[in-house]
Length: 101
Image (cartoon, rainbow, N blue to C red; front, side):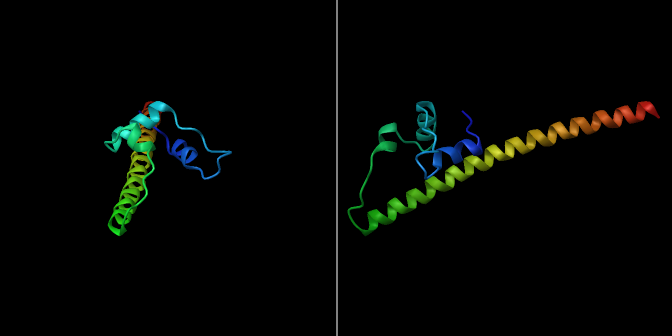
């Protein structure tokens, strides 16, 4: 399942009025990516001590970084596809120019 960069941004909006609700299949895909269950993803934990707080903060940073990585991979795939299309168009124009010469 692919989620576009703009799709991720819509899910992450702080404003509840403009934030798009996450679809069940999207939530399941994200949970799977992080090797978690949907229950794990929806349970709120409160740190019980300093080490637990640090662990939760590190897990949150990891989660954000992985989200950024997904967005970057999607952007890279889109850029690669655009580059391939441009290269094909360039080759087509070159052939047309060579045939016209």
